[in-house]
Image (cartoon, rainbow, N blue to C red):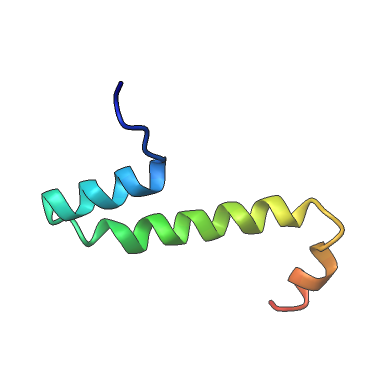
Length: 52
């Protein structure tokens, strides 16, 4: 049976193998934007908007 890995460990293995370390900041920024968009539609929105 094949070893099961999650998407984060597979992505970090890809970055290490291909020496594409410049992709890591792009992925982190996209992840943070996604979290901001998700939290923008919840009751936490007033607290987020006061940061900006």
